[in-house]
Image (tube, rainbow, N blue to C red; front, side, top):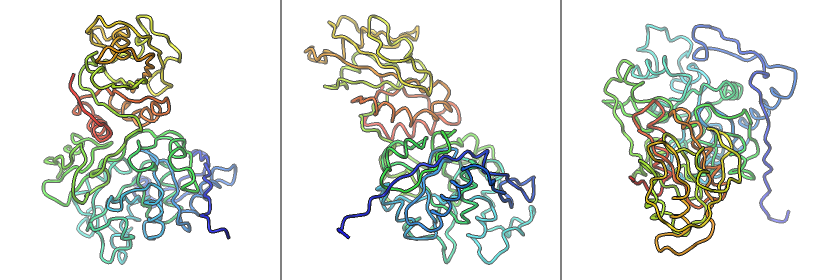
Length: 455
């Protein structure tokens, strides 16, 4: 032995959920909420790859990355301290940032909450015996499996590793809707602690490539199940207080929650900026979701004056457009197009803007919804003092217009603009009350942004 740390080789294994086998439900009306099993296929590599990940979860102290419907998770056996410590080490995550525990069925969750009871014997009309608090039953019926995490009291004694919850007397529980995630957890036979599979503070990963970029050499195995559907993490709620509160916005909106009995008065219990004190849920305390480039969140139109004020000496600009900024017209007025057109969720478009003499105060997006690239060129390459600074590259990426599409594309776009080498990213804000994903989008953007400005 030469005393050097052993190098970790990270392997990406593709798994097609449609080829792993058949899901068998004991009670068809309950689906994944009830008792179910998998009859694994003996053909192809998909089931074998999944079983390899299962083995790592059961025995290794290094976490396994896997897709959920929200983002890719970094999973470990929630009952083993060494395995949970592997999550914190790989992500370089602060030790007081709690983890969400993922389950594959309600019987599995009930076994953890009340080991001495029969998790399959809880009758539909006998909820008083259920170790899951009654307040959560309407949410579970409507939103599980899905992008919702509920805060539950820790059982005593708790089978969970202490590092899952830190000093908290509660833990977050979630049942993902991704069949691949459910299969992995079910076959492992373990509650799986799993934050997002990114390096701490970075944008959350929505593809296996994002995970590999951040965690190559830190973990052994990534399951590649394709792109995530939702694109932002789960909503976290606390129904153990009155009135109930949302601790983190996500795929289930406050309007959707208020339609459920007992949740009509649910309140917002989070701030979009970093918070102080011990966090009650993941994502509350620390700066999150940040690319290397500076992020400036802009309400309203992006004007020459605004660009000039915040661009500084930067020579590469990223624009993430949503409602009114029109990337498809950015190449107007003589700019040089050196990249392909981007559709929402596709490849970005890059433009090289020549130095010009400022003679305009036109907003970049006017009433007709079109960019005025000459105005961008004039302000960006000259700066506030009017000294020529050479060429400026503008990379535009369209997040879409619907909040759900913006949520799905957001983290990928921030990473993509980073990869393009931009110095600063201007992001077009949306109305946080528009659509079920809008509050989550704005929460993530405010945590990622260095500045939030009004034009």
